[in-house]
Structure formats: C-alpha cells, structure tokens
Amino acid sequence: MSVVLAATLGASLAGCSSTGGLRAEKERAAQAAGGKAAVNTPRWTFAMVTHSGDGDTFWDIVQNGAQQAADKDNINFVYAHDKEAGRQSQLVQTYIDQKVDGLIVSLAKPKAMKDVVLKAQKAGIPVITVNSGAAESKEFGALSHIGQDETVAGEAVGEQLNERGRKKALCVLHEQGNVGHEQRCDGAEKTFKGDLQRLYVEGTNMPDVQSSIESKLQSDRGIDAVVTLGAPFAATAVKARDQAGSDAEIDTFDLNAQVADGLKDGSLGFAVDQQPYLQGYEAVDLLWLYRYNADVLGGGKPVLTGPQVITKKDAAALQEYTKRGTR
Image 1 (cartoon, helix red, strand yellow):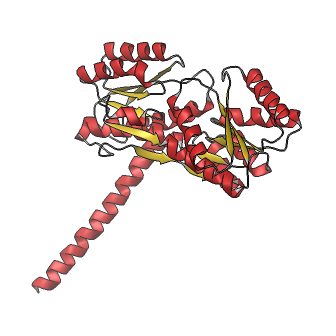
Image 2: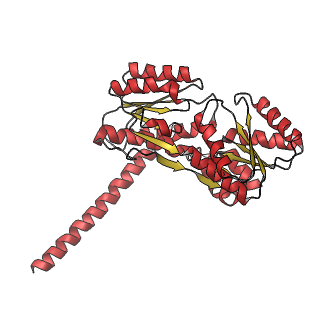
Image 3: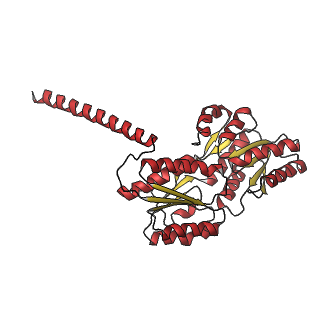
C-alpha cells in the first residue's frame, strides 16, 4: 500500500512539476517576445560603452542581443560608444557618476580604459567586459569577459587558408592600436603556411579602404587571399578585388546579412563568426544574475562565443538570422 501510494504521489508531483514548469517557461518566453519583463526584480540600469565608430553594423547586433536580454530581465539598458579611447573612457566615467547598477565595456585599447574600469569597481559597480580585452579583463577587476579569443580565431583563419590552398594573404587592419585586430593577424600568421602581409587602412573612410586594397592587389599579383577584420569591410574588399582584376579570395571576420549573401553567391570564401548577439545578450544576463544571485561565469577565464567558421554551405541557414539582426 505504502509503495503504491508513494509511486502515485511521486507521479502526481512529477506531473505537476513538469506541467507547471512548462507553463511557466512558456509564459516567460511569451513575455520576453513581447518586450515584457519575465522577472519581477528591481528595474536596474545597465550601461554599455564600446569602442564602436558610427554606423558599425557589428555593434548593432551586439545591442540587439543586449536589448532583448534587458527586456526579459526588467533592465533599463543604455548604450554609448566612441572609437577614440579617451572619449570612450569619459563615457564610462559619466555612467559611474550617474551611479548605474552595472557596466558593460569593450577594451579595444586597454591601457586607456584601465583607470576608469577600476574606478567603477571602487564605486561598487559590477563590470562585464565584452568583445576585446580578454587578457586584461580579470586584471581590471571585471566579473567576466564575453567574446572570442582573438588569437585562436586568427589561428582558425590561417588553418582555413591552408585548407583552401592559399599561398599569400593580406590581413587588412582597419583600426590602428586595436589589440584584438593585431591578435587576429598574429594568430593567422602563426598557423598559415604561406606569406601573410598586413595592410593598415582608415576604417572610417571606405573609399580609402577600397583604394588601398585595390592598389595593393594591383602591385602584388601574388596575393591570392584578402582577410578583412570586420564584416562591413568584406564587400569593400570585393569591389577592390574586382577593380584590380585580381583573382584573390575575400575572407572576413564577423558576419552580417551582406556577408551571408556573399558566402552564398560565392563572392566571399569564408567568415569567422564570434556571435555578437550572444556577447550583448549574455553580458546583460550575467550582470542581472550577479545583481540578483551573485552568480559569476567563467571562473576567471573568458566565456567564449567563437570562433565559428562559416562557409557557403552554412550561408542559407543563417540568412534569416542575419536579416533580422541577430547573427
């Protein structure tokens, strides 16, 4: 009798737990999809400050992820950016003065950001770093770093170039002083069996980017691969290649709708995706978890969102996501 009763009670409880959990999960999903909070925690304010220039579609995707997590977590999310490190630092200081409840910061130029990130710690504001500065994140006192290991991502590029039979590659750096960009080219140079050269361009001036790549391809016909370090520069490199009459393959770091289309039609060879949507989403979510439950992920190591190598066979499946701004 007791065994039967226990079994019946267990089944009943399991059924209630399963049904209740599923119902609650569906309700939370519906609320998040409608832009409504799925939790009843306080309406904290989280600020994100990045090194993005104007019109950078990569950071639009990061923001999309952050905003969706903020909607779910009942967070007031604010965003600011400046490609000049000193001004980026000033923006962070502004949010410290406003006593925000959490900060998300990119560290493309870590030395310029160190003091202000440490000030946030002293003010009791938790910090998550994203995208760049993985090596400095822990030293600066951040809770976690979310992004890809740029050297590992570069190594993946070098390996891809080898597999595709390339012999001479051009690595195009569009932001001088960005440690992550140097690490990408360093990684590619480490694993690439051919000759890798670097070309520094002014990323805020696309006509200059195109003419610089075009000139290099015209002067060195041995270049059979061009690697850009950001999705917006891939299409420009394709134009430069065509104008130069070169047969070089164009490959790129990062993914957007235009890159997915280029992979599908063959004008691009491959892309290395670091999933920027995840970087924004997880940064907000981790700050919320820390404020709510003192949770920390990574154990002092970066929480990796990449690299993921994308080729023509993957493009069709990803086009839907790139067009809605989540990949």
